[in-house]
Image (cartoon, rainbow over all chains, first blue to last red; front, side):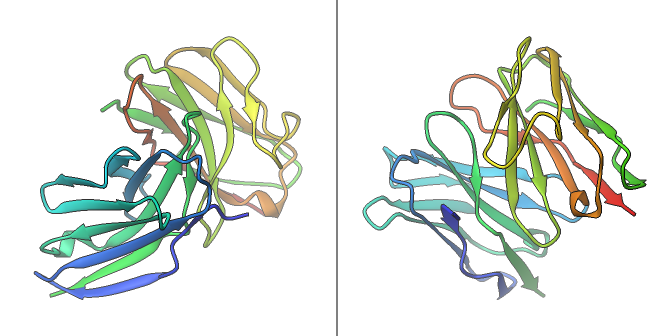
Length: 111
Length: 114
């Protein structure tokens, strides 16, 4: 039972434009949400997180938005750069710290 | 963040054999986890490695197949036992410090079973 869903397997965006990645979840007990970036042959790298008490968190070019009523979060990357080309995973946890991951979205930034 | 070293980085094994994967962290951490990423799929939690006691396994994973040790706060091992081709995956160690720190991952062990 997939509790975290990323329905877009891939996204192509032009350099300098905005990348928007979406994630939906079904478990109402989730209270902490994270985004990871993964390059080939490397482990996932933590990008940004948000607690359920907030609806927005920003870190440089990366912003995560949380809509609890819709059980939806999104990651905005502005402006997109070629080095952002990677697989992005959405993850969520309840108070037990165990992470449930989405299937991932492959982002390709075109020059 | 903590520096996490996983060994081996990759291996090719014969079916029926076992392989032990090591995870070493450069600082003491509260929690350590083991995940699996099967080809073309997302990461799935295998178990939480508990220091000085038996690991806590997720549904679908059992100790006889995936024995885990965590003798101290910086080191853990995962053994994949009696391997079959279906065990071909990337196995990843993650660690979490206390408080609201996120989990950080090692680079994984790419395992292929012939």
